[in-house]
Amino acid sequence: MIAKLKIKEIRVKKKLTQSKLAELAGMSQGYLSELEANKKSPTLRQICKIADALNVYPDKFINYIKDG
Image (cartoon, rainbow, N blue to C red; front, side, top):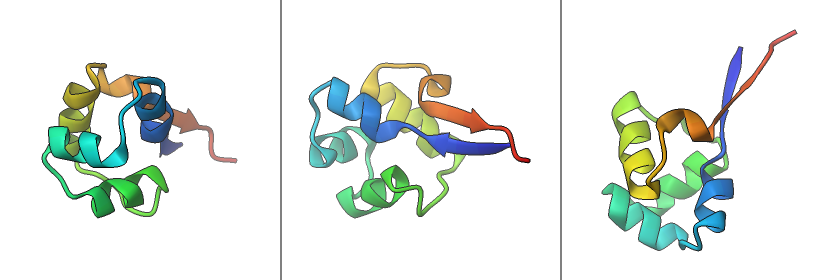
């Protein structure tokens, strides 16, 4: 299974800029950009911080793709 994050999708629906979400989640805008592009893999702690900032449960922005 491959996990693909849907952070951007939820952020846009909630009308938040990358900069604002990064501030709320306590991370840099550049790092959040890389997460949204699936270029970096966040820690569980970072996933929880982003979820808190978006006011959603962490599983709401993780999309599991069956490998194979």
